[in-house]
Image (cartoon, rainbow, N blue to C red; front, top):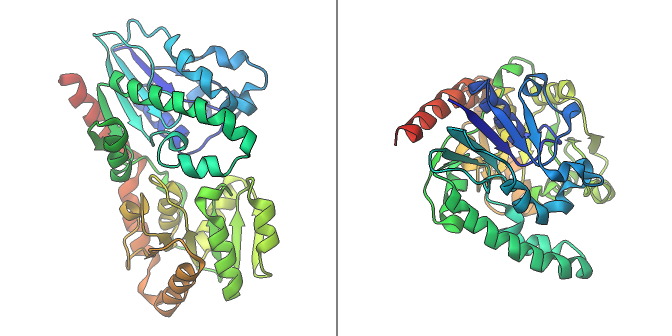
Length: 362
């Protein structure tokens, strides 16, 4: 069977790229198609595959400014020649599913999220940019929204990374989707180390992840908070932070693992489609204090492996921190670890192998 994997861009190694690596392991002879490719950022196993880029790769500064070339991506996808492939798997959160396949080809889309900035997060995105950028962005994103909806009809079967995303696929595309949670490398963590007296906020410091809630709440409580990650909100966060908050910037994976294995709890205040970080925290034995909406509802067990707060406000987060501290003895590293093992890489490979076999047999 000849297989093609289509991924939006390969310039960072994040959750979507880890899913692609697992799919590439499932199909070791597959060819990979992507808009832009930075080989130095990818794992060696992925580089063993034949990787074909779109014409956007040749645009000035494409590796760094690929998002500015978004209007060209629908056309770029349609230039990929996928004749002769029996199976095409697109990995979608940026434009990827819009490839053209023949009637003999089965197209399965693993959807991390419909493009947030053209659908449910469109108002927030438009409010975050300047007036002049809005004048350019509004017609461009209108066009992308129309194309995104129409290109959903090119997919034979959708698989969502969470039930939350499956609902959004139904809402925006009017399509049903099966759910297979993404793979988490739980084996890289140990849950046996003693916990230290600090909370951890881990991830890109962007507005929609709401790191401001963690920084302000823990500052007001005077509780130690370590922030790992970088992004455009970092300067503002440093300005609002109290003396109990420490910023480490972006860190290598070894340091991330070390802090997850030692923190008192992970603070996770954003709304995520799935959210790999809470599962990694639990694999390291750390409870999770999460906003009770979106993917966190599928990964964190309220009262057992963490606690939810149900309003994205400083007050609600402070309340859940104090509640956690009053019953910290109820949360064990062993229970957190056992729950996280249900999201392993092996489980993902098994479920995706079964799902794809089912799609091919229809």
